[in-house]
Image 1 (cartoon, rainbow, N blue to C red):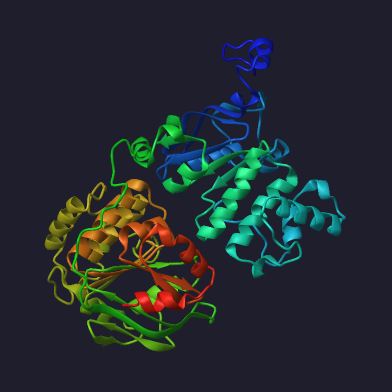
Image 2 (cartoon, rainbow, N blue to C red; image 1 turned 60 degrees about the vertical axis):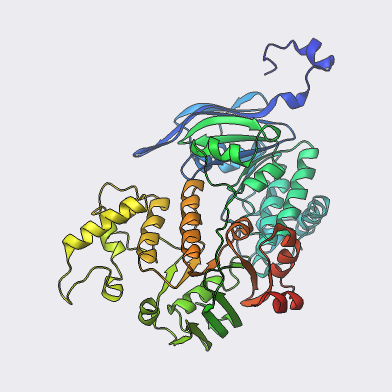
Length: 531
């Protein structure tokens, strides 16, 4: 595999080139099609020894499909894979591991009731029928200590934090001897401190000669951790570039083919009276456990209050309780001073409260109904189009829907198209069109950009900032700190259903925010920023 016009003995030993110049992995002319869509078309990438290669692209660009081919989950229709210069047929994940290729997927594949050690060796044929438990546990501990990923080998997975569970996934690969690691959105559920621990481990791995393919939507992380960046658009590679030769704006342009709003500028808005007030709210989750614990907050007119926290700390239950979808145990919710009865959604809608749920497919919309019917789903309450109890003015609804399709740039064959056929970004635009058409006094936006590509994210950002400029009070529950920093006026940190404290929306406070996300109460921060 030593080529590129170089003569091996002369060029290599004279110092002109080194082993790092040659790829440990090559994917050449990979094509993969599914019914109705070509996910990868003639894609070629290479990974060098001791580097982090970031893989960027909008949703549907083909990143995960390409990595699933590399890990043996899918088989390519065309193309080839070479490992260390040798053409290799990767037929399964187990086969990939034998070639030193491991993958940590977005959704962990751990058995909660098993110990760390049991999860690490689960499915490994080399362990045989009799597992030498002490040997396995000792090796896991040594690996964890060596790479700054400590986790107790005998701990049950269900007792561990999300960050610790991710460590197990990485240790599983290191245990097998994998030296080519694929990480798909690895920081999506981590605190800033946990992300930094991960990055330190990756730096140590690559310093020892391992190679990493890093998939992420977070451009700041890509610029921090990667050496080179390959960008996919519509299933094709549009460029590979060193991070020293580009910046965030340049990456965005490669991803979408045009300039976008990368650094959001918040409009000047006069912060006014309290509009949404939550006092001493306590709520149970679906398992009957306390998810929101005596929580209080207020959002004022023209303000975006961001709620930061690791997923699963009561965010969903808080949003649903404020909107009336989930009854509270105690406490109160007031809109413009008016007390909202627990579990009553209708009164909240009539009072000017709207809700953008994180699950746009099953909660925010009805997949089998048309764009028009989804937009007018709440018409019996909002009266956007006048109608009698039994008759809808379909002509007026159709005309209004066409206006919304145009103003919200919804890409759909027609207003009669079932929303299940729309992309995630266009589906979210349908939700925004419906909720924002009511000229709300307050908005609950729960992970409004989750799963969206950067173009759709930009549209959501602009929509929320436009509402802010109109004086709307917005409660933004988001998992990404960069999103909170760019949109919000204040940041509240939630942990186990309680507000740990408040900070300004400034990266300078990222360490303090991370500590609060891990459960450290900041009393001074609470008092200084509450109102």
